[in-house]
Length: 334
Image (cartoon, rainbow, N blue to C red; front, side, top):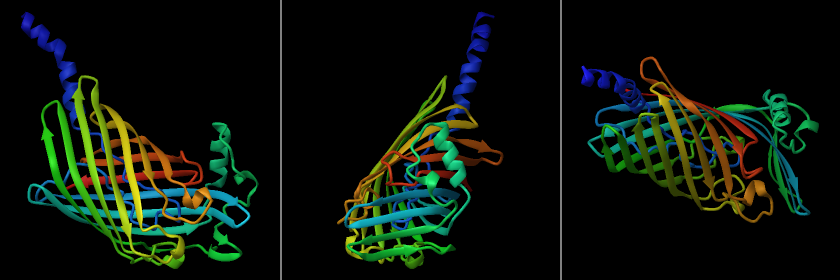
C-alpha cells in the first residue's frame, strides 16, 4: 500500500515530464525582414534535427514587417518606409539516416500597409522612441537611397510576386535521444537562386550559398522541457543587382535562443538573430552596421500534430532591422 501511494504521488510529475517531452524547443523560422536584407540568402531554418528517413517536413510561414527609418549624412540619404509581407512554403524530405533535401518558395508583397498607427501606439505604451514615425505620412511606401548626389535606389510602387527560391540540404552530425534529453548537431546548407525581381526588391539578383552549423539541447524535467539552441555560419554571394558596387560577398551570421515548455501543448521562447553587414562604403547604420534582432513568443501544438509558432521581433541594433515584425509559422511532419 505504501508503494502504491508513493507511485500515485509521483504520477503527476511523470505525466508532466512525459507530456513536456513531446514539445521540444525549436528555433523560429524567421530572418531580418529589412527590404535590403531579406532579398539575400539568410537561412530561416536553423533547427538541428534532420527529417526522419522517408518523412516529409512541411512549413508555411508569414512574416509581416513594418519599416520606418530616415537617416542622412553630408554624402548619403536613406529612407525605408513601408510594410512587407513574406509567405514562405518549405518542404524537406529525409534521405537515409543522416541526410535531408528540401526547397523553399517565398512570395513577397510590398505596400504602404496599415500598421503605422499600431506601431506608434506600441512605442508610446512602452515609452520607446518614435524616430520620426509619428510625424511622417501614414501608410506610405517609399524606399530610397542616394550617395554623392546619385540616386542608387528608389521604389515607391506597391507590388507582389515570387521571391528567390532556395534549395536546401542537411546532414546529421550527432543525435542522442533518451527519456530525459535530446541533444542534436547538424550541418545545413542552402543555395538561393535569382528567381525574384530585383528591381522590385523581391530578389537580389545574386546566387547565394549558405553553410550553417546548428545545435540544440532539450531536457525533459518535472517542470517541463528546458531547451537551448544556436547556430553559426555564413553566406557567400555573387554580385547582385541591388547596390551592386557596395554589396559584400561574404556575410557571417548566427542565432542563439532558449525556451521552456511547461506542458505538451505550449512553449515560450526567445531568440537573437545576428548578421554582419550586407553592404560596405556607407556610414549609415541601415547599410553598414551589423544587424541584431530579438524574437520573442512561443509555440502551440494544435490538433493533428500541427505546430504553430507565434513571434514578435524588434531591432536590438536600431535601424538594422524593421522596427517591428510579426511571425507566424505552421509546420507538420508527414
